[in-house]
Length: 124
Image 1: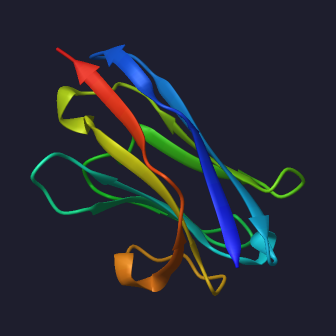
Image 2: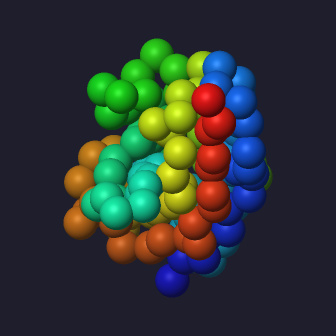
C-alpha cells in the first residue's frame, strides 16, 4: 500500500503561480512512477503530468506544457508540481497518483494509488 498526501493549492490570479506537493509513504514509494491529474466541475479527470521512477522521464499534457513542471525528491519521497502562468481554465481539483511500476504514464487507468484532491482556483 502507498499513502499519498497532497498539499498546496488555493486561489491565485491569472498569470500567477502555485506549487503542489505530494508526500508518499508506505511500500517503496521511490520505486514508483508518479502522476498529477485534475478534474474540473462537470468534466472527466484528465492527465496533467507524469514522472518516472528515476525522474529521468517526464511528460505533460499539451494544455500545461511549458507552464507546469513536475519533479521529485527521493530523499523526501515527494513529488512536486510547479504551476506558472496559470489560466482560469486550470481551475480544478488536482490529484496525485502512484503506479505499481516505474514507468511514466499519462493513462489514468495505470495508477493504483490516489491522494486526496486539492482545489486550485485561478481567477480572471
